[in-house]
Image 1 (cartoon, helix red, strand yellow):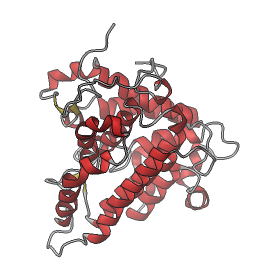
Image 2 (cartoon, rainbow, N blue to C red):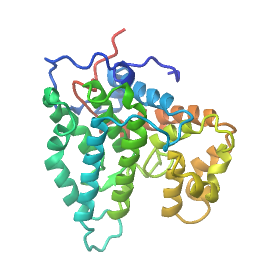
Image 3 (cartoon, rainbow, N blue to C red):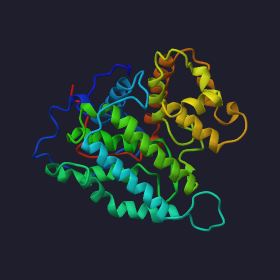
Length: 324
């Protein structure tokens, strides 16, 4: 699919017609059970909506810093409160003493709290007249923090959070005016909370047998983060492997926040522990990096059965084929 694929109704810019009042919400369920089902996913409204959402946001952040000025709506503020609650629960749920280093079982206690409270948390964010959407949208919030059985986290969980935000656009809780705040405020805060989870409970990277992601856990902030750098007067892709550049600029650029976290978590030469990223530092321009990452995201995440088999589909993220 070309990078300029048509944007669907899930893009924040099309929010003039959110779901109708009498819309039938439903609790999302798995639909991709076998490898041959992948064709159904790629032809689905869900795929078109999700990629449309990712690419619309990608366009919106081009050339903009995290610290630039933008509108912060009431829904954005409520989402930050929600993420603050998840963060506080980590503080209230210290890691358990256990022999194995990875996969601290206290994560299950933390997750049980989210499992119990998710609908109430979502209800507090969405308009009252859309209260019926809470059970459907809450599923994506619960899916976005990792797996409580395996105590792992990967790009499928990250995608669930983007789908959660996409659903909020679809019901009209978020609008086109929220585009920058969706990434710079909400998604950025989500990443902070996920890093804290990963560190506190020593979560395993999901799918680590064959690394789908650029680093062990995330992908989207590299796409949107590379878009921020497009047409930057001085910083080129080759600069992000320079720790001084990272330390001086990470507060402005999501991409460098990710690199900073990798540098904190891993030791040894960057080229060895993060080979995919090292290769990207040789690409001449940020727009080439951005286009390449979108292609790579489709190929390495969205077209991989081990990732997509966990996706859930409902009325907002529909498995139905795109109407011709």
